[in-house]
Structure formats: C-alpha cells, structure tokens
Length: 348
Length: 278
Image (cartoon, rainbow over all chains, first blue to last red; front, side, top):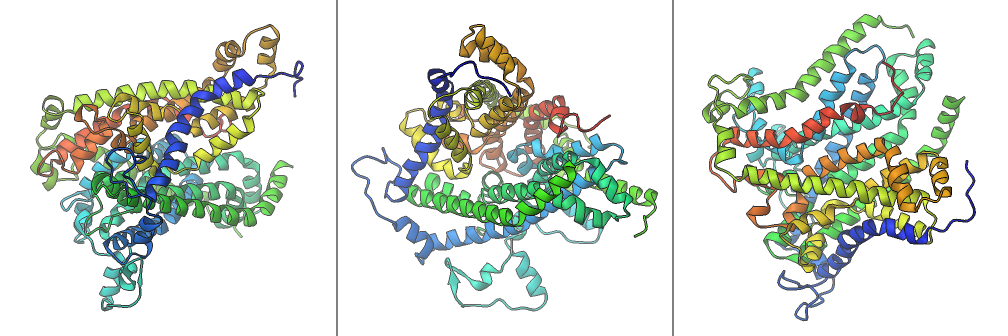
C-alpha cells in the first residue's frame, strides 16, 4: 500500500481526536449503565441522589418481584413480555420477507420506474415514529380509513386501538373453544392468557412496524443484490432456471449475510417498542400494548419505582444480548461455508 | 424448465408493485387531505382525498393558539447543533481510529463497538440519572450534549477513511503540516460523501428523537416537536378526537425530513454508487 515515513507516534493527537467522543459516550452511555445497575439493586425513590446515605442496598428484590413475585408487578411484567413476544414473532419474519421480496422485485432489470417504487416504499422510513403513530391512530380509528375500506367488502372493522381481545382468542373462540381457567401460571399469567395472541390494538402496531421498516431493510437487500454480478443471475436464467428456483438457489444464498443482518436488527428493534406506545396507547387497552420498554419507563418516571424500572431495563438488555448471540452463532454455523463457496464462484 | 412468456410476468409484477405503492403512499395523501377537512368530515368521509369544505382551521390553531411554533424552534435548534457536533466529533474520532497510531487505539475501538450494542430504550432511566446528577436536567445542555456523538457515526467515518488511500495526507505530513491541519484541510474535504451520509443520518435521527427528550426535560418551554405532538396525540393537551389538528401537526413535522430526503434522495437510495447504470 504505502510506506510510512519513519515510525510515527500520534499519541497526543490521537487521544485529543477521540476524547470528545469518549467523554460523551462514557458520560452518557457507560456511566449511566453502571448507575442504573446500582439503582436496580437499591430502594431509591427518585428523591435526591441515588448515592446518598438514605438509599439502601436491597439485593435482587426488584428482580425477584418481577420474575417470581406472584404480585401485580409480576403480572404486569408477564403481560408486557407476552405482548412483546407476539410482536417480535410476527414483525421480524414478516418485515424480513416483505423487504426481501420488495428488493428482488424492484431490482429487476426490465422494470421501469424503479426510482418511483423505491421512493414509495422507502418514504415511510424517514418519518418519525411519533408522526406515523398519529397517522395510524387516525387510519385505524373506529371511523377511520381502514374500517371504511373494510366496509366496502361488507366487513365490520373493529375499533382497533380500543380493542383488547387477543387475535388467537378470537380465532379459537370462533371454533367454539371455551376459555380455560386455572392451569399453571408463567410470570403471573395463565396459559390461556399466554395464548391470547397479540390484541387487536397490538396488531395495528404490528402492521405499522412492518409498514415503516420494510423500506429500510429493502435498501439493505438492494445493496446486497446489486453487489452480485448481474451475470450470475443472467447465466442462471440462460440455464433455464425459473424465477422461483433462481430466487431459491441463486439469490437467497448470496444475500444470506444481509438476511442475517436484517433479522438481527429486527430482533434488536422489536424488543425496544417504546415511542409508539408512549404516543398511541400508553399500554392500553387493558394493558395489551404494554411492552417491557414502556413498563420500565412507567415504573420509574410515573410510579417512582426506580429500582423496578431499572431492573426491567436490565432484563430487557439481557434478552436483546441473548437474542443477538443466539442469532449470531446460528448464522455463523450455517453461513461460513456456503458463502465462501458462493463468493469464489462469483469472483471467478 | 421452460421459460414463461416475459410479457405476462412483467405485467403482473407491475400491477402488484403499483397496488403496493398505492398502499404505501395513500396514507400520507389522506393525512394531508384530512388536515384540511372539518372534524365531522374527517370522521364521516375519511377516504376522500379532496375535502368537500376546505378549511385551514387546523393550521391556524397550530400556529396561533398552540405551542407548535415553540416546539418547532426547539427541534430546530437541537437538530442543527447536534448535526454539526456529530459531523465534527465523529469524523475526528473516526479519523484517529482509522489513521493515527496511538497506544490504546484498540481499546477505544473495542469500546465504541461495545457501546453500539447497548440498546437505546435500556438507557432511558440511566441517562436521566446522569443528566440529573450533572445538573443539566431540563436544559438545552441536557438535551444536546448527550446526543453530540454516536458510535455508529464514528464507525461510518472510520470505515470511509480506511477506504481512501493515505498517500495524499502522507505527502502533506512530510511537507510539515500538523495532524489537525492535515485532517481539516486535506482529509475532510475528500470525505464529502461520508460527511453527507452523516449529515442525513444525524438530521433525521435528532429531528425524530423522542425518548431522550422525554427523560431530559419536563418544562413546556423545552418541548420538542416529537414530544409535543406525542402529547397532543395522547390527548394530554386537548379534548375530542381533533384528527385534522393532529394530522396537520404530524404532517408539518414530517416536512423537514421529507425535504432532506428528497434533496439527498439519490445518495440515500443509491445503495451502491456506480453499480447501476442509467
């Protein structure tokens, strides 16, 4: 590459250059985590400094209240976990599939008006979650656009954001399944409640998440698709591969690294649902849009249960870290060999 | 396998994509249309793109009888300062991590990566604690300083500096220019594409930021657009549905990011520069 003119030492300049970033990140990211760790094992009530003499160490009580407490605290946490699990289970696969599909469609050589389609699909991603939520509250209101469209098909839309019924419950009950009572409780929630599915209100948020993120992820997939040599897929077409088999055997293996990135980003993002809930429903109706992120905020800033709020934040942190690690290790195992082989083929 | 007739597939693709594009765009058109409707019409005729009776009542209320202009000003101040700060500090750090030889560089690098992995909402309470402890709660300092650097931005700049050849700056150094001068007048001008990316991301990020302002301020005089409109939406400031008003506010707050998006559209959408011809 290039030759260095003698051995250079930029120690002073180097540290000077990184110091603003280090100070800011250290002060507002690193130290906060340490402070919150202390608060999560203390009984600090929000008055004065959490390090003042009146604040006591109470061990893992905040965590045990949430995980094994048998009280309302545990029930709320369990409800929030259930809500978010359904959110993740639906949003991540759907947004990944939709964005990949959009990218493949928009990337077709013969397609005209590519720019228009890309802009249309990407635009929702630039708007703020607050503005989009406001729009969604209107679209999905009782007299809103969605219900109006449904009425053309003689369907009676629900009052989306006021409807706490679980979607799975609605389906099960339409087949005559009766609500089960009793049974084992996990995190203070009965089995029947765990199988509620996302509430109708949460479903509206799920649709919103897919709507707003598919554009961003489409761009990631597009970048990957365009890095492949057009010749590869053309050659595949020449060899007589149909669209489906071309997608399955040529496109998919090549965008696999991006696929895993999108899934990871999706998993990280969908566990952090906060803005929408703060703007839209504040956890209602009947706590069916409560998420751990919002619950953590509510516990601390509204109920002054700072220890509990911090404990929820740490549990959430752990969930996200574990998700990422599992996802990474799975992708590494499956990935390394085929990708290397694929790259060699493309490169030759 | 036989090839299907190309024409039919293509038509089907067009139809599908156009239907989808309509689904993606229509909500925004409805939003703008509804902001010019009367409240009864917003409820009775939500689909119409042209109001039967035009009214600018929503906009009048926003500008004359609400804190909306103040929110807009606050968002503007924060966004401009944060964007300038991020561009400067991130590129400084990115340059140092890419080019300068100094002891501890590896550690700093690892730290920046580690920080990137910390999810934002987990920091809600912790950030409030530190901001409060530092005595900058409920001030512009508390709103701006924590956002002045971001790990992802440092990474974008670091990657970019690593991708350009070092020969030019090496020459400047041999000619006796100091490290900062080399960085400021030689390296930075070459980094325009990456800087633009950073400007777009920072602008969009700080304009759309909500949760940081929730935990760093409480007084109405420091409310930003996101916080103000969120409160408007959750009905903390009003009665009734007021859809035209809320949608007008949401539409107006989207205008600046939409402008930035359309100006820099090519850069944002052009996923690999030079890969697509025509």
